[in-house]
Image (cartoon, rainbow over all chains, first blue to last red):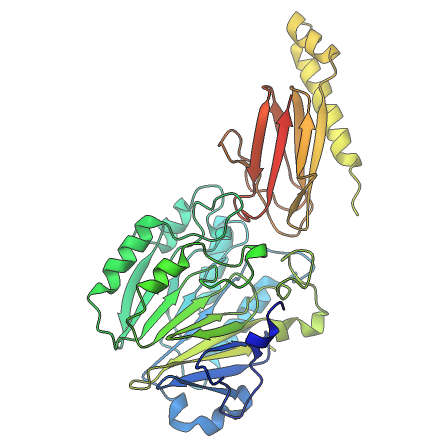
Length: 321
Length: 118
């Protein structure tokens, strides 16, 4: 970590895990299980084991789950059974104390964009308690046909390459596509057309509307050397400056990580398929092999909970172990 | 480390195949006698190796993906574009004109490379 002083591991469970400048970067590595709640601009962190103490905080108006990076079709040593681990993720979702109303899938549904890979994921997700799934594509979902198949399957009613927005119980959700038309040497990109649409999409909203943005590649600069960032995300975030509560949910990096900057909480979810190394900790961001008995501890789901009037969404990662 | 023998064998077969296809026509025979040049680029750890390659005009380059993750080989100038290459899959392109040909992986655009044909 090049800038350790500004990065804090999210292992402070004393309800005061925030620095004095009101600016906090925290990282919760896969499997640690942490909950962040921001209340009136103050971020509080809890471990999953303290969930029962949270009382009313845990019972919000809206609860949904994020899953990511299922990579259906992947069959290498890092996880020869991605069907099994996706099923385990669904079991985990079905076992949540508070059933989620819907799911977000933040991309890399498939490994090679094969129809049967998408079919398998769709079939497995049907057994989840939450019936609605909102998707955004990962780069693995748009292979060979510039995303035509993805749009036919998941993008009905979406704009452009598959971006869209919707409202649930007063929360405004924006699904963005940052994996199309990637340029040599570059990062994820949203593009002019999508940014214009987004500016227009949020223009009419009240400042008090909680915003959830979800996209595959992180919208913050996690590790540009590995392409873990989005070139024009600053423009997208500029449109969200007026809002009191913005939560950004991403996938792609196959590990949980969190950062809070001003009004925006950034969060990346674990994969349901295989882990990837921490930034710069390996020669490449390829699949990370862990002993078989540890695999489920580095895969997971993310449970998100919105409590009206609290200006915050609580984000809880849990491993599949 | 995997051996590159299979690639070499494949390329040799390919060259032979082309010569065979010519069926004795002057042009093809002449080309076969020039021993078509071949070269290899291996994809390992999210990088092209070698990332820059200088070859004589007419060289056929074969890329082999040796990662556990799929990659593509896409010319920045859209001159060539592979299908997605899963582990151990290959893509070949013949550089029949002199020039500099930058390319990248359209899935992981941080992966870039260049072929110079002269």
